Amino acid sequence: MGHKEVEGGHRPWPWVEVAAPDEPEERFVGEAEAFASAAQEHNVPPEELRRGNPEELYWEIQKRVSRDPLTPEYEVWEQRNRELYDKVTKLFDEFYRNRKVEADVRLGAEETRGDSFEVSSERVALNRFLDNTLTPEEKKNLLDMLPRRQKEMQDFTVFLIKRFLKNETP
Image (cartoon, rainbow, N blue to C red; front, side, top):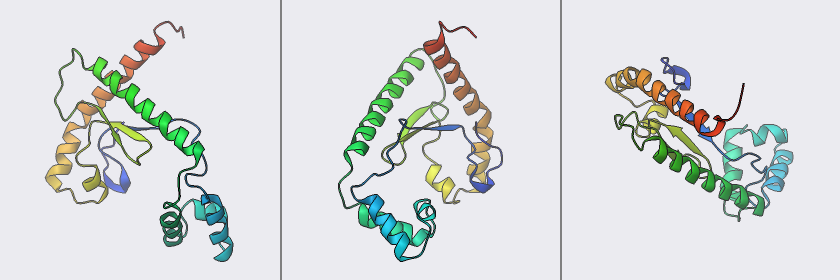
């Protein structure tokens, strides 16, 4: 739900990555074969290479295979993510229909990898935060806002529970 410690990649705002279940192993046609071949050629365990080790070789293969078409399975999964994104944005419309909050506390959805998305209240500082280029004052501002943003995420969670589990009994 957001961290007060901003070192080590911890974000000082709550966020959730959202993606449809069962992401296909292969995004591009021929991707599995390209990784297997490169792993054998460079004497690297295939599972290590798929996890990004060594990084330079991983990105070289990604660059090469990304020119190929998407697999049919991945296209279906990507469409499910678009539908999920649409559902979440409609839930935000419903949640905020009669709710007034500061713009920088308001939750929203933003694509992250082009196929999944994040729900958070911070969409401006993410890249600068990840690049570690925020000024000390900007970091302090983010930390000062953390409790309000945490409360907003908690309120949205309660909204979702009431909306979807209202007939459930514990």
